[in-house]
Image 1 (tube, rainbow, N blue to C red):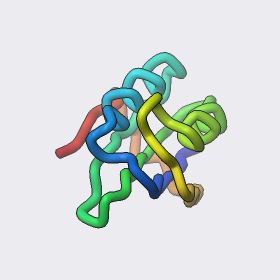
Image 2 (image 1 turned 90 degrees about the vertical axis):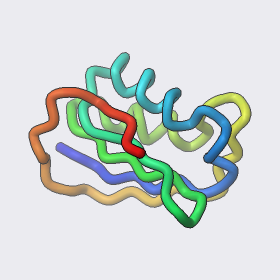
Image 3 (image 1 turned 60 degrees about the vertical axis):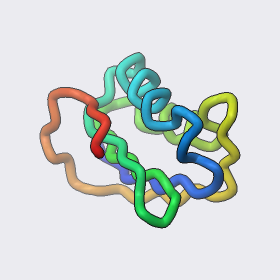
Image 4 (image 1 turned 180 degrees about the vertical axis):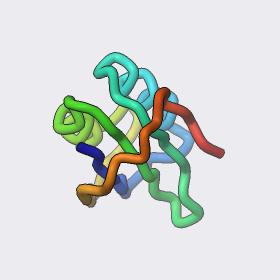
Length: 86
């Protein structure tokens, strides 16, 4: 199962991408995270524990403020690692 998560709020400049990568790797998920031009963060995650990443994303790291979260199920793309995209 794979999910795409869009995190809206104060989520850039607060180590959201790095924290997402660490959390995803601890959950043995693969995929990517990227800052979007509109100030949101997008996450593509694949693996068995995507629900745990979704729950974590509702608050994110210490200095983040999550105002909204959008989640879609998407097809697996076969990633083998979790990366920060720029």
